[in-house]
Amino acid sequence: MITFEEAFDIVQKAASFTYPSEQVDFINSLGRILAKDVYSDMHMPPFDKSAMDGYACRKEDVKNSLEVIEILPAGRTPEKKVGANQCTKIMTGAIIPEGADCVIMVEHTEEVGDNLIRFVNENTNTNICYKGEDIKTGDLVLEKGISIKPQHIAVMASVGCMQPHVTKRPTIGIISTGDELVEPSSTPATSQIRNSNSYQLIAQVKRAGGIPNYMGIAEDSEEVTYNTISKALSENDIVLLTGGVSMGDFDFVPDIMAKAGVDIKFRSMAVQPGKPTLFGTFDQRKFIFGLPGNPVSSYTQFELLVRPLMLKLMGITKLPKPIQLPMGATYKRRKSQRKSFLPVIIREDGKVYPVEYHGSAHIHSYVFANGITSIDIGKETIQIGELVDVRQI
Image (cartoon, rainbow, N blue to C red):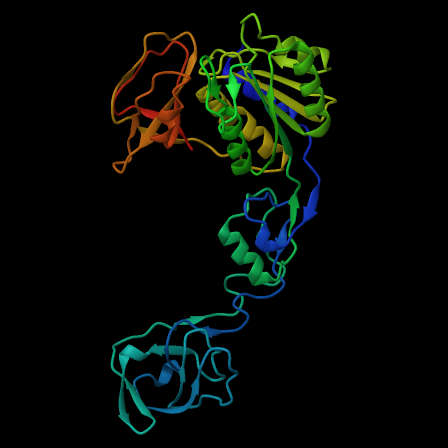
């Protein structure tokens, strides 16, 4: 049994390559990992423009009455040059006409005659957004290795990047094992339960940017399990199998994996939940996780081990980091031989509170949680006010 930190390091080191890239329409790139830097094809702003509605004039003339010589909406080229004691009525985003070097706010003016205005404030800012002050032609605007967000889509649109290069998404095979499982559409008989793990993992895979491939429930048979695992390894980049990895009479999955050619890197971790988590590689470029059958265990270890592996394979440069927040209540546990991961809620006061949690089968506790924190081996109590690392979920 190894520590979680050792297990995390093994999984990350196994991801010694990045998936190839492909081009997609920029509007469909949300959540993908950018595989190639994006540069600007133009200055932004592309011209000196007005930062507000007002009057474009010469700053040296602002104390004088000003003749309005033109009305200039955004999107139209100025036709007249602003001279001494003249101004152009200008709208936000319009080009600054030649001769003008400031814009006075319309709220700071009054009309004093036909086509004549006067500045009534003491001072004015320039109120001009200058050509290229945000971005210049050739500037790097988006760096490869980021997960594309809505604001990145806006930047792509502004620089004409219609077909960004993004990393291909891994296909994730998902298998549940156990004769006690039935699909959610079925009514369980005595001794049966509905299969929730697979559908939870499907959703987690989608959220992490992968393509889920649900391969059904494998019965507790060595032959069926072997055939299912072999098929999954041939069709997918990563395989997630839940159940059959602990110490029961029918938990023969590790031996089946080895028979199928999996190089098992570890079989258990000193954590709770998720102690009997298994990880292995296949043909050097494929990966398999044996996750415990309890839903909290599979949920937690996906977030802690599988998702970071997926992100690294897709080329993300900075894995999501926990944030440090103070505990809003004291938490105590009876046993401290393993590292514990706990569902918590971050409340409006900026503090972290444990949610009611009955163990690794209690997936309902995560309905109320928006984070996971941990308590290290050998530590029994987290005191109120103590800073803890929180992974947001």
